[in-house]
View 1: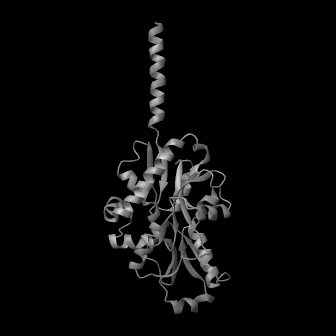
View 2 (view 1 turned 60 degrees about the horizontal axis):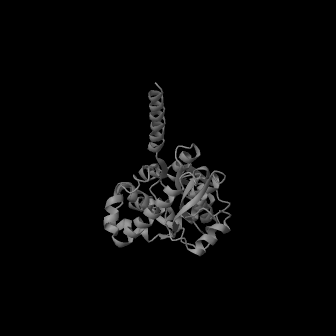
View 3 (view 1 turned 180 degrees about the vertical axis):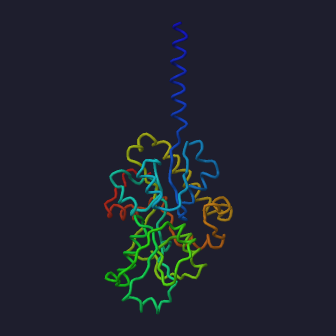
Length: 285
């Protein structure tokens, strides 16, 4: 009888252990070109052994919402999304710096755009995302802080597929900016400015850092390998991540890569910039 009870207890604990092991570490990832290394590593099967699951989302704001609700353990985002959850998350893996990848587009001619400064202009963007930071910078650059804008809050996926009315601005990022240009929009401002610093990283729930420390360290190595694979063979990389690029061609994909700088090797000047924004770098791997 004692042997039976002991065996039952062992089996129960074994079952609980397996159940815990089967629960994956979930990371929310949207379609920004700088996040493609996560999709590449996932599609190559490199994250399965790490018990990490990439959860594709339709937007940065959707990833933010997943993180808010504890649906995921980590998410790919910029410092703008971080600010909304800074008591809960911290950056652990640096990915890229936007060097023109965040953009303001319009279907209004430049001459007409300046003529419209005295009337309200519709602006489509994702609220609670880096779009707000880019638009704030855009207004400052154009000296348009006092102009009235009608903010239309939608995901990038909705915006790029919508039949937008005439006379609109769109605050977006790649690969959506390229798709909007195909629909007649033109670029009027980008994040390629010395005084506009936007970085992307994997941000993790602070409570998960110690628990999943080894997994995140291995994830960091896999992402470094993925970025190296992109540099060595961009066409092969593109074929793997194509399903996550919203109908972007290979040539367009190459062009969007010119709009970012990889910072996965943790450049000292980047870490300094991050710290200047009052963001801790102590957990960055």
